[in-house]
Length: 161
Image (cartoon, rainbow, N blue to C red):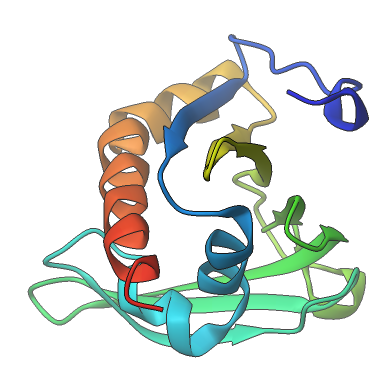
């Protein structure tokens, strides 16, 4: 992690981390993450789909998605963006809705860190949880395989941009 992100140290008891160097430049990864028409193309691990996406890219802005299961069941996600550093860092939480409004039962805060690496990007995604039980539940739900598959799909899609 770069010096500007060094203040946050993931806690292995509370946080899940996906870190990989990918062969897509940070600017394209950022575009795929922050523009709804692009995010919908890769965000949900296939055969799931992201059918709706709204991103108000500013601190206090909303981050909303609807993921659809292969059986047709919709799973809405509502969150609030906390930090935006273009092409470098995006932080959001489901503990809040847009406008910093409380959002019921919090599950996680997510941190995406992008660092140049050769012609590609060192991609770090961190899911920050309030308890070991919630972290374990997220891990058992398939954090590593799901987020890893979504990242593979992002790479595939971003190369077409």
